[in-house]
Image 1 (cartoon, rainbow, N blue to C red):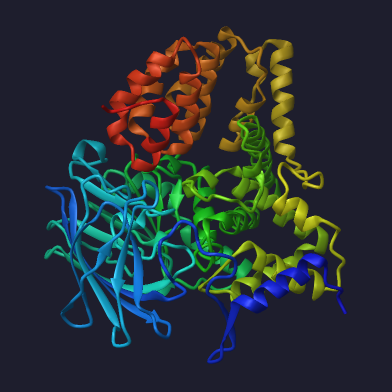
Image 2: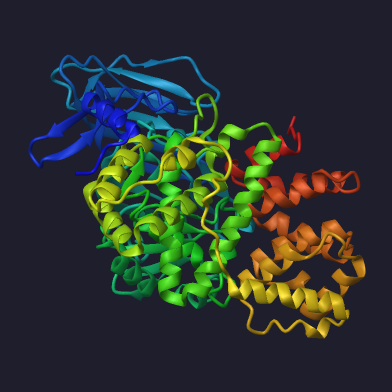
Length: 627
């Protein structure tokens, strides 16, 4: 019999107090395992939403959504109220069941969390309905003018993660609360409307679209996009949407979506969301991708023309298991979404393109993790290098760092090393199956890990493994070491070029994007203006169509004062909204006495093209105020 560790005993005692058994299907349902989610006002221990019926009119002229949100609710005995999260919404009317008006209460405003909407309920209350309007500056929504898109029509898209859904739907905005939904959305005629649900593939001439999501999801996975869009099928249950001007370019990179899906299913079981489609958004989208169920949002910066950046699609697809299917219960547990997803992403890429390819990705993760840890410690935020976070009073976006993604990945890779890949894959398949459509926190996962990976296989777990990886700061000493032979070849190529001073020795015809990125990362600090100029003359980096390469090239250009690249850099910053690229370039410019004024000049022109998620961080970085 496996001997329980002290931590395991404590966790078991904790869960025996907080779990309830669903006798109907004999599965564990955890409502509140370890304290309330600190980023929501909702009172799920008293009453919670179960299903949403949403009717909406999308008003492009005024940049608002007029809507009615009706919720079926589940309440506990003697429940007297249900509390929803709102932020910047104009609440017009609230009623229960059929048409019984309710005197609701809006509590005091919190700058981060918004305003709690308290709605009285009683034993006869089965549904609550809220008529409301969004504001033009709703944080989740970006209304794009035609000149900000790839065509000549306006566009709308949402970004609900982490706690922005409350700015366009009054809702219990916690990853620990799941619900199904139906929707009826009216948009301007000729436009296509899409949601994280069953979606149309052609424009409806009436401008009215109906949606259904039968699998329960948390609020951060609610999504809406409206624009001039076309659909391209890529397989039995895969395809993508894009603006007409982008559709052919997107097809070059996304034609293998069905192979991605089937590879993922072969690893960790059946895809549970029926359809996997990708929406290629206009350039202002602030992230690489967003894993909205059935409709992954993706940045156009992944369209390199050679499929070299589609590992992002593998990442968002992997979220269909880790994140969408099994969800972090609070944003303090964010690594449970992202660490698992990076691990799964690399397994997909290994299965499709080989171990050499996935080890390049792992090596990049290792580099980014070391840099992130150093930066956080230098800033006095050492605690934020732990996997289990404490984000009380802070925006959950603070936790969206390489710690959750890359430290989480290396922890899972370490577990694989300890027990062997075969046993680890069996464990992950079991994990995704047993916790499907549920939320889980770190402590419950660790208990489950001890029992079902180490205990079930009668393998002794190294002392302090969980403590060192999950609750300690920094990088554990037993972190697995990636071994990329392709990156070693790049290192040798750099040394050969610098020692011979002959740039023609750089033979890059077979290099992937990742090898070019590694090339930039390994260039010495002593690199000169003339050497940078020579690189540009040979490879034309300044005019690259690859956003990942451009981003690194511009950082090098700033460092070497290579001003011939600055015009393209300004164009890139104005027309790209992806936060991953914007933050390091603006940071490099702003920290330089020579370029601080340039950073602010570009930002003043570019800011209107950015989503709230991006300009909220950049305003702080640049000490920028629109007043």
